[in-house]
Amino acid sequence: MFYSLALLLQEGTTADPTPIGIARFFIAFFLILTLYSGALGFTYWISKDE
Amino acid sequence: MPIGDLQVPVIGKNVVIATLVQTHILFATFIIGAVIIAATSEYLGMVTKQSRYERFARSLARFVVLLFASGAALAITFVLALVTLFPIFFSYLQNIFFWVFLVEAFMFLGQIVIVYAWYNVWDKLAYRKSLHVVFGFVAGFFGLMAMTMIDAVASFMLTPAEAQVSDVARTFLNQTNIPLNMHRFVGNFSYVGFLVAGWAGWRYLRTTREDDREYYDWMGHWGIIWGFGFLIMQPIIGYGYLKGIRESSPGAFETIMIGEKSWVFNLLVLWLAVMSIASTAYFVHKLRFAVKPMEFLRKLCVGALGFMALFTTLNLIPKDGNLVPQIGLIILGGEQTPFPLGSMYPYKYIGLIGLMLVGVFVIALYLRASATGFYWGRASRWSQYALIACALTVILTMVTMGYTRETARRVDNDPGYLIYNCITLEQELTPQTCPASGLEGGS
Image 1 (cartoon, chains in turn green, yellow):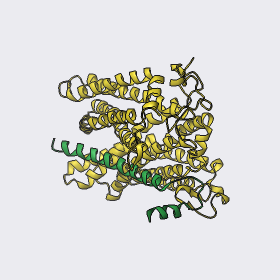
Image 2: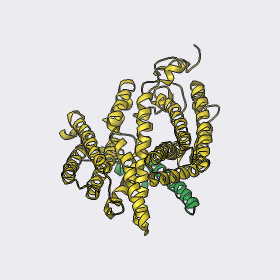
Image 3: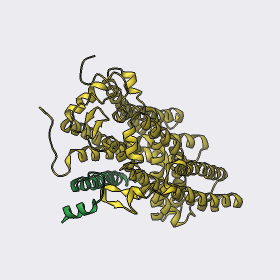
Image 4: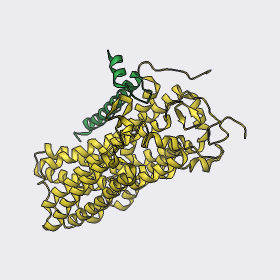
């Protein structure tokens, strides 16, 4: 279903995207923000009582 | 390929590198900018005898010291991932940039040593404040030098110099190294300024103590001066950077500016619009609380807010209906339907120049007002939401810009490049198209 949806979304496009490419784009975005906010949150947590 | 063809399931190896590097950059930029802002604040505390500068500097320095581990761990994990997943590419990079990486390593070491020493001797050097401030600036200098070194590598990957790869000076000073370095130098302060402002806004809304409300109100103001003050320099520096890319890697330039990936720049100007309008609205609001009432100046700022909205909206108009072709977001026949107001010349130029001029005007008015002081602790809730919006948006800006620079080398993916026109994503050399000579061996 995801595959056909992705193909439908790309109908008429001139680039050569693949469903996995689009998925990876958002996976990377999610991972970056998770790692970043996680480390920031952790740093705040270990320092907030000082 | 004899070695180094490891694949990462599901997410692929490009995502591994992108995630580690982009997250590392979010920390590294924070650390470089924060150290210099903290050292400057400490200096201002010393000169003006206002205790809030000292409190701010020390808190920020402590946060930097604690955060350093995360940034450094990500850097080393990234290098490990690069060696593992792209060993051939890495060995070329290491050969071309041996000296640069060596200097980078020592600058990094210097930064660690001085940052920790700076924070650790805060009380010990309480009566030798000038010396202590110098510690902070030296730490900032080491950080900036480390950034300069890695910028040489990053810029070379997009615009390899038309010279022998063994020519250290030419590869180091490739066409976009200086503009990239300027872009990041200014970006450090802007990024940290907005994050500080956002954090202050959050704390202001949460705190119940009057003295803390005053402090966090001031901290939001201090952060946004750095954030917005440096942000408005970016369009002209970014123009210089893009000019360098257009002249030396036109294919990459076209991809991100007028081609299939031009939506990344529309995203960027969207973030720019959010930060500019939110900052200007914050300034307009803050002028209500000037110790010396400045009604005329405030009216000028309200006018500036209107112009800011006008110019940023002008920047947002896409050039045609081909919005995001990668996901099929095409309207009104795509490329067949150009939008006249979305063209680069003259409208985008008008938009960007207008944004800068209005930005300089409004921050000059704000600084003029802040010279006489504000009543702290009275800011409204929505002004703090504006600060928080700026902080969240600046993170998205960083991620968008990182993606833009790296994806520019892909052009049409036929093939995509690790070093533009020189080494493909499959780690194969393409000496016939590479402007740099000597990669394949020989003299």
